[in-house]
Every structure is written in structure tokens, then in C-alpha cells.
Image 1 (tube, one colour):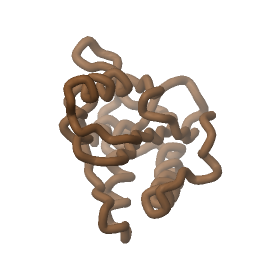
Image 2: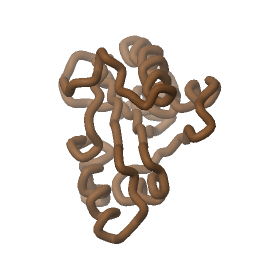
Image 3: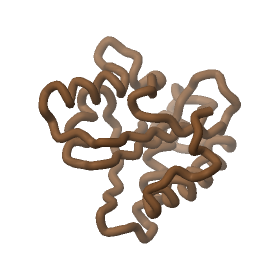
Length: 154
């Protein structure tokens, strides 16, 4: 997820693009998206597991990577407006509406330096995090198991 013209907010798109170039199991689909909240429901329907990668501005150390359960993820700026709801609420709504929702949703985040300035490049800490995220997410997609380094919530 992300916005390609808001500096570090493009993290998820960069990682997804790089993941799509790697060999993956036949049942893995990598997609890029700029939507959040309720609009995300259409993207996750019909999958058994969904992995979301997004930049987050929460005051942590720039480039810090976290892996959280989708139901627990409260998100950052993309999820905080009146037009959007946090991921857990969107997933719950999908279940209540009878949508074929994934059994597991995982969110990988990297702490952003800047998600508001127009720019197409990632900051240095987030670019380093992108390299790590490609490896971590690829490992989880190939094995179906959380990488040992991030298996427990931070």
C-alpha cells in the first residue's frame, strides 16, 4: 500500500514491485494498491492470507520494522480520516457482510521519516527497511510462517 508521490509513503508499492520480480509459489499473488479502509475490502476478498506492507508515522525509530496482526493494526495517516476506517474494523465489516474474507491478515510496517512531502524517493532509513522487508515478506510468502525475527509483536 502507499502513495508513490509522497516520499516514504511509497514504501509498500516499492516492496510489492520488488516482490513481484521474485519467484513465488503459484498460489501467491502480489499486488500494488493506493487504497485503504473500506476500499481495501474488494482487494482482500477471496484470499486465505493477505500480507500488507505500509509505511507508518508513529514516532518510532525511522526504518523500524514491525509485523502485526491485521485485526490489531490501527494504521497511520491513510486510516485516520473520516473517510476511512482502521483495518480491523474494515475486516470485521467484511465478515459481517458475508464476504469471503481472509483467515489471516498480516501487516508489515516500517517507520517513515516523511509521508507528507511530495517526492518519489524513499528516505535512507526507509530504503534500507524496504530491502529488509523484501527478504522478510518473501520468506513468509514462501514458507507460510512469520520470520523468526518478527514472529512476536514488538
